[in-house]
Length: 226
Image 1 (cartoon, rainbow, N blue to C red):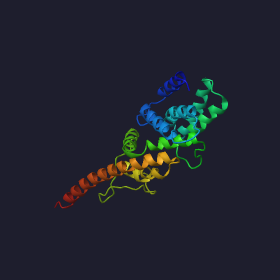
Image 2: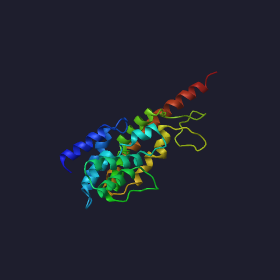
Image 3: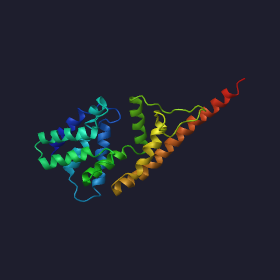
Image 4: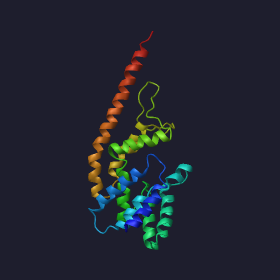
C-alpha cells in the first residue's frame, strides 16, 4: 500500500465516522493493535488488513438510521465499492469485504481468513479493559441507557431478565463485556486481553460497591422513618 492509497482510505473513513463511541480514535486503536497482532502471524496481507481496519465501521451510520441494518454487512459492501474505485482487483476487494463483514460477533458468520480474524480480535480488544468500559458508557449514554436499575427492594439489578426489557450498564457488563475474554482467535490477542481484564473487573467492582453502598444506607434510613 502506498502512502497516497492509505490517505485516500483514511479520508473516506473520516467522513463516515459520526458516532462518539465509534469515532476515528477507535479506528486507529483497532488498526494499531491489528498491526501488533499481525507481527506475530505469518503471511498476513497487510494491504487488506490496513484497509479493512480503517473501513470496518463505515456502515455504522446506516445501522444508526435503521436498526434492522447490520453495520458489518453494510460496511462490507461500502468497503468493497470504495477499494474498487482505487483500482484494487476483484479478489482483493472481496477479501476486504469479508474482513469487514465478519468483524461483528455473530456465530452465523465467523471470520475465516487470518486478516479477518485479526480484525475481529482487534475490534473486540477495544471492548476490553478500561477503554472498553468507557466506550460502552459513552454509547449507552447516546442511546439513553441508564447506568443501573434497582429492584423493588432497592438492590442493584446486575443480570438481564428475560421477563423485562430493562437494560443498564451493569446488566450489559454481565451479559456481554465480561464474557468477551474467551472469544479471541489469535494468541497475541488473548495475551493482550488477559492484561486488560483485571482493569475492567476492578472498575466494575468499584462502581458497583459505590452505588450499592449508597442505596443500602439510604434505603435503610428511609425504612426507619416513623
